[in-house]
Image 1 (tube, rainbow, N blue to C red):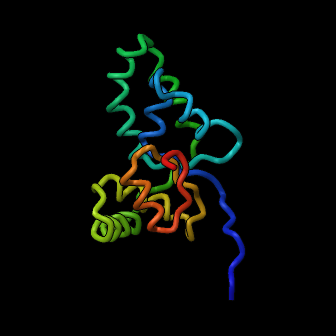
Image 2: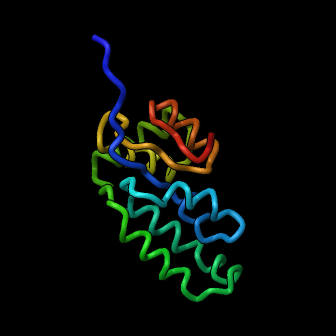
Image 3: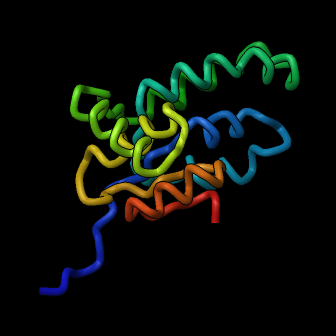
Length: 142
């Protein structure tokens, strides 16, 4: 029996997209991916990765409020919990695809909501390939 088109419920946003939103040189493309009314999903992994990188961007942009802006963006996102099932799926994804460990966690978190219900937003080429191989709709890295 043929299935109809997938109903996407939102967009999973990885760290590369969020970080570039605060980089004056890359912000425009990422703004297209995180603005609008489409529900955004992510994991706490993004929080850790972005906070780690914001110090560089603050000195680049000259703004003390970059972390505040990130906190506001992060508050708009629904958080996918990284539970034992996600960790197990991440190990399977890493083994099968060869992606880096943290990238496997992003992919597993995005797939936690079921049959590719989310678009996967990334600027990372290898991560985009792995997401497509898992049947996800990828945006950002065309």
